[in-house]
Length: 252
Image 1 (cartoon, rainbow, N blue to C red):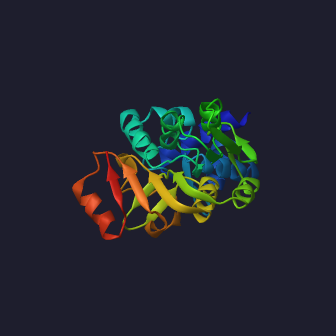
Image 2: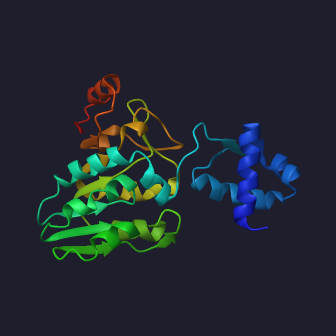
C-alpha cells in the first residue's frame, strides 16, 4: 500500500473518531505501529492531523496545504494584500520572499523594480520573477517539498543564515493577540524564523481569515513583526487587540 493510500485511511479514521492512538490505528487499519508512527509524522507536517504524544487527533478546521489549493483561497483579498505589500519594495532592496501564496501575489507588482535582490525558497516566485530584467534571484538550497513547491529543511535554514536582507515578506498559518505567530508545521516555522532573524524589517502578509486564530505550532511573538498587511475584512475588535500589542496594521 502506498503512502498516499495509507494517508487517506489514517486521516479518515482519525477524523471519524476525533482522536486515535498509534496502537488503535494499527489494529483498525492492519498496519504496523512503526509504519503508523512514521506516517503520522509526515501527515502532521502537511497539517492534516495534529500529532499527539501517543497518536493523533483531527484538525478543528482541515487546512489547505498544497500551494495550488492555498492560492485559490481568499483570492481577491490576497491580490489586494500582495499589491499593497509591493509598495514597500524599493529599487535596490534586498528582500526575503517566503513560499506563501499571499507573498507570491506581490511578484507581478515588483517586476519593474531595478537593482532588486530577491532571496526565496519558493519555486513559483522563482518562475514568476525569472525574466524580470532588474531583479536578481537567490534560490535557497535544500530539500524540495513538491506539494508546497518550496525548499525546506536544515540546509535551507543554513543558507538563509548566510544572508542579510532589508525586508522579509512572510506569511503565517495563524496569528492572534494571545498566542502570537503559529504554523501548521515546524518545518515551515523554521524557515520563517530564519527569515525573521536575518532581516531588518519584517512585513507579515496575512488575509483576515487567519487572524485571531491559532494553528498547531507556536513559534514567535507579535513583537517580531514590524508591519501586518491585511484586508479590509479584518474586524475592528481583532484590529484593536493587535494594535494594543503594538502591531502596526495596514488594511486594504
